[in-house]
Length: 186
Image (tube, rainbow, N blue to C red; front, side, top):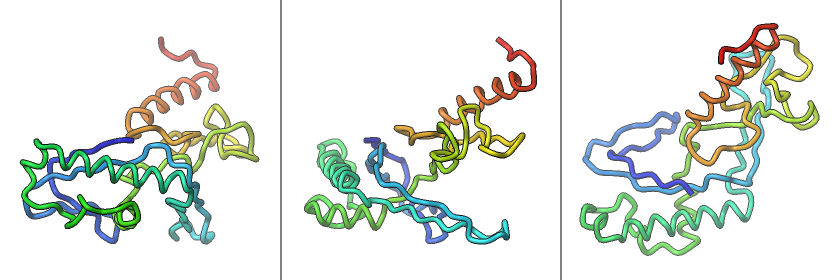
């Protein structure tokens, strides 16, 4: 579970862009870090300008639904802590403190998002039957093409993706140099 306490009010617009709120405040939230639901991405057209068909299938497993409810319960406990309660003039979601499991899950469904950290869409694996990339980040069946970003992760990381992506890029630089017959720097 990852807990966030962000020093500002914001929301996500329908176009997916974050928008800062006009009033002072903070956002307290929690999210499960190891979802078991799996979605899909499909090519919609031969036109590369056309967006792909994305079906996230969020909360499609019982475990993910239980984890979302646990995240809501954790936020309820944190919000009720004396120090945070003393700072809170009014909750953003009226009645949140009294929500039952079903209401917490509905609230989670209504407000949850990717947090702009999608991963694993071109995952590494053993072969083309279970992955897009091999262990050296090369696209199966395509010469001289690698993917070096969070989409190459074989599994979702338990937290933000910046540091793991930097580590992957550093490893990829070494692999590229090795494959070119050069020795990576120590």
